[in-house]
Amino acid sequence: MTTARLKSFEHPRTLVVIGGGFSGAALAIQLLRQPVSAATRVVVIERGEAIGRGVAYARRDYPYLLNVPASQMSAFADWPLDFVDFAASRGIAGAAQAFLPRQLYGEYLSARLESAARASSTQFIRIRGEAIRAYVLEGRSVEHRRWNVALADGRDVLANAVVLATGTPPPRCLPELAGIAACDSYVKDPWSLCEDARIASGPGERVLIVGAGLTMADVAVRLANSRRPPARIDVLSRRILAHAPQTDFSRATPREADRQLLAATRCTVRGWCRSLRQLAANAAARGEDWRTAIALARSHVPTLWQQLDLDDRRRFLRHLQAIWDAHRHRLPPTIAIQLQQLVKSGGLQRFAGRLQFAEPLKRGVQVVWRERASAREQVRVYDRVINCTGPDYALHRSSDPLIRALVKEGHLAPDPLDLGLATGSGYRVIGRDRLAVDGLYYLGPALRARYWEATAVPELRLHAEQLARELARSAARPQIPTPRLRRSGSTASRW
View (cartoon, one colour):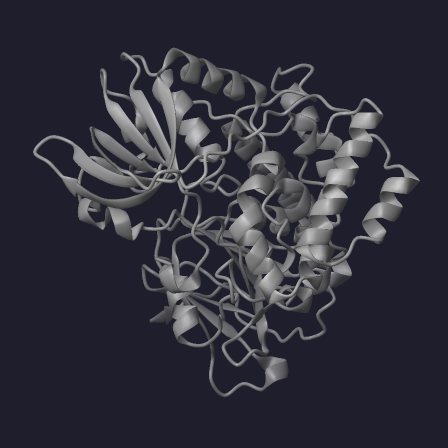
C-alpha cells in the first residue's frame, strides 16, 4: 500500500475521525473551536457524499421528521437555539417547537462544520472513503505511537490518534428470517440507501413490520402516505408498547424535593422505579405533564447506570427497557396522530408474539409466529417483510469491516451485555486485555454500554465537547506526514 502524504504543517498533531454522521461532525466542529495553542490537524473519513448526514439525516425522497422540537437540537450546549436560527435563515419561522425534516438537520450540521473550518486556524481535511482497518505501526514507543488507517481503495492515512465515530449500526440479521434473507420481499434495513426506495408501497400490499419502535412508526406512516393505495400493515413485536407522543410540556426548574428524591434513590432497578413513579406522581399533583419527570430523571441516568451491577442491568434490559423506551423516546405529534388513524381504520394491526421462521413463496413470503398470550401459532403470507428491530450493537455480529478488524486484532472488546463496546475514562477504547488502547477513542451511540443515555443529540453533543477537550489536552505531539490523495481526481477536500 502507498501511504498518502501532504506537505508538512505547523501544527504537527493529526487526529483522524472515522465517520461523518452527527458524532463525527460534532466532534470535528468542537476540535476546530479549540484554541490555536491546542490546535490539531483534523481529518474526517466519511464514505458518504457529505459530512453531518450519516444514516439519520441523509437526503431522502420522503420528509422523515425529527422526533424532538428544533429548540432541543442545537449542536452546541452553549448556543441552544442555534438550529432554530438556522431554520429561520432557511425561511422557517417559529420553528422552536416544530418537528422539522431530518434532512434539514443534516444540512445544518454540514453548514456549521463548514463555518467552523473557515473560522479556525486548524487545518481540516475531509477524505471520502471507507476505512477497513486501523493498526499501530511497529517500532514506535508509546509516546511516539502512530496509527495507520487503511482505506478500501488502497490509500492509507497516518494519525497520532483515531476516533471511531462510526454511527448507528444496522438492525440485526434475525435468525428467524434467515430463510428469506436473500429474498426480494425482505427489507433487512429500512434506512440503507440502496433499499430506501423499496419502502414505497405497492397497490394493496400486505406488509409485516418486525419491531414496534420509532423506526416502525416512520415506515408505517410512509407506507400509508404512498401515492398508491395504502398497504395493509401488521406490526409484530414481543411486547406491543405504543410510544408516547411528544407534547409542548414546560421544562420547569426541578423542585428541591425532587432533587432530594433522586439523590436518595437506591442504586437498584427497584429503587429507580420507585423514584421515577414518585417523580411522575409529584408532577401530576402539581398539574404538570409526566414527561417532566422523564426529563429530570434523564440527566441522572448515566450515573445510576454506572452504579448498577451486571445483574441489575440485565434485569432492566429484560423487564423494563421496552417500557422506558416507550416513554423516553417519543413520537412527533403528527406521526402519533397518523398512527392512531391507521389503527382506527384497520390499516395497521399490532401483534405481540415471537417469530418462529419465514420461508419464500412464489409470490411473497410466509411467516410463522407464536402469540405472546396464548402461545398459539399464527401463519400469514405477506408481500414484504421489513426489519425495524433497531440497531444491533453486538460487536461479534458487526458487518463493518473496520470494527471486525479491530475486534480481531484485540483493539476492541464488547460490553458484557452486547450493548456496545467497552470504553474507559476519556472515551478511550478498552481492548481485549481489558486495558485502554493508547490513541484509540470512541464517540457515538454505543457509549450506551457505559452511560445508557447516549443516543440523543443533547447527550452526544456534550460527549463531543468533552472528548474534544480531552484530545486537545494530549501532550504527545510528534510530527508525522499529513495525508494526501495519491491520485488526481480524488474525493478528499479541504474547506
